[in-house]
Length: 117
Image (cartoon, rainbow, N blue to C red; front, side):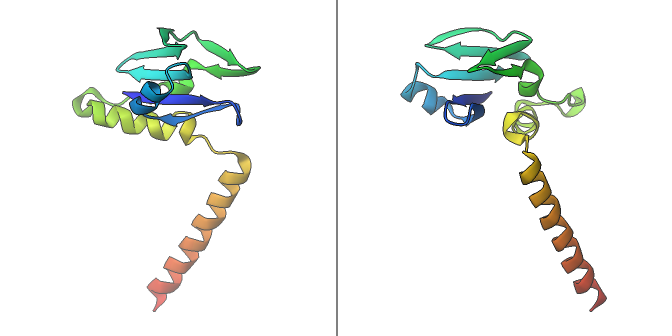
């Protein structure tokens, strides 16, 4: 199962744990269990609609669904990792993506120089 909590300061969902739900049961959470995506608000769960608008920001259900994994290697661990990588927590802003690309470019240059030695 994967859990995301709505952060009012950032107007975005971020990764959360089941312990956070227990600590703050009145928060707004998205829960992904197997093939179900649920919204939990004020302790009440309901299926997530195709699009959920929170604080004026729309969130599509597909953001919280993992990429399909072939059935021969599918298990809950793979599904959780997929959800963490490709869910909202895996989305980078343009600045973050550019920074990551620059870091990867530098790492590649360093590796090429090491191979020449």
